[in-house]
Length: 297
Image 1: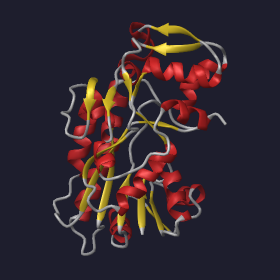
Image 2 (image 1 turned 30 degrees about the vertical axis):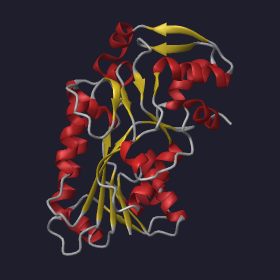
Image 3 (image 1 turned 120 degrees about the vertical axis):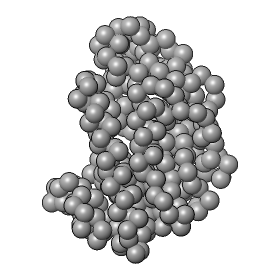
């Protein structure tokens, strides 16, 4: 069975459906099992975060995918919300790791979500060997990955460092495309910062690929092989939509409007999926323009 913690979220539901389409048994870990059964009705088992319930479902799990964590973009980063961002990631990861270490029949593979933001703001090409940055997102990702570590060499462990996910209806893309629909297409910040993007279809395929390929372990960048700058991304949207890029929104205005949260769009990572490429993964969408075009059909 493949069990997903945070399986009622944007990525979790798409992953669960893709596994079900492959005739896999699906388990969902959620705070509210009843609500989860309504949102993911095709799952085979449900568990809460209560310890005994977790032990029960994890003992029957071959692969665990932990996607738990509060949205980075949902609210302004007050001190209180920053604590929530940290705790909503570290506490579930730590609890799962501690319980798994007590099981007689633990999962053979544990994939814990992480973020490409671990590298901080980078202009040089960065693969999984790159050092961590020194901003808030870097700190969150470093602590997240530490908390997820399971002291058992027989369990394959992966930290899925995901980039900006391009999806038609959810995530960042609808917000990025919206100004162009109203002829107010904009470049955010300097435009020189990199956008480490990945199409939702390739993200789902990458999870399937990593599960099947036992050599894949440790940190893995789940991003396209061709990162682009924010200016290049805006121009790609412009070409696809045939709407002009009219404005550049200065970084200081974004800082005023969004506070520290502005680093999500004003800073970026020139990150590449070194391990995925090395192990033979093939992207369906390698270029930003073709990915954008596919989402606007």
